[in-house]
Image 1 (spheres, rainbow, N blue to C red):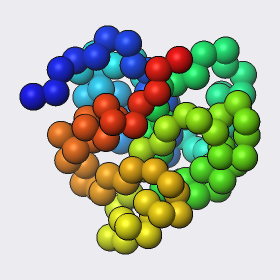
Image 2: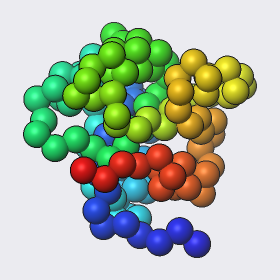
Image 3: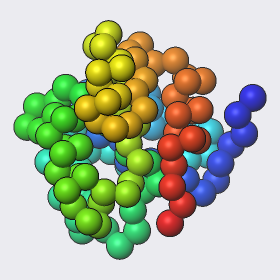
Image 4: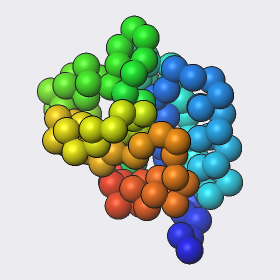
Length: 127
């Protein structure tokens, strides 16, 4: 069983309010703190105004305004943001391809809770 972690902060980037709510509820019940944004553009704006960064970004692939691929390209090009680990959430079957293009762990939808918690634990950085 994965233990609660009281120190990790997760940024949820997902355009579905229902998915945001479910992830927030699940993660906060496990001891994480969370915040969420509806797309990659808003996530970049938020991250660029923060003094402390999240330990991990939980990133949906397909979103309006700015999707996962574009967000990840801009994030990796930004010296202040490039080291924040990302766990991608995708409904696509081509996990290996997404993992290679995004250089991040990938969790398929529907989300397996244990796989998600393990990925967050393995991919977090401590600031």
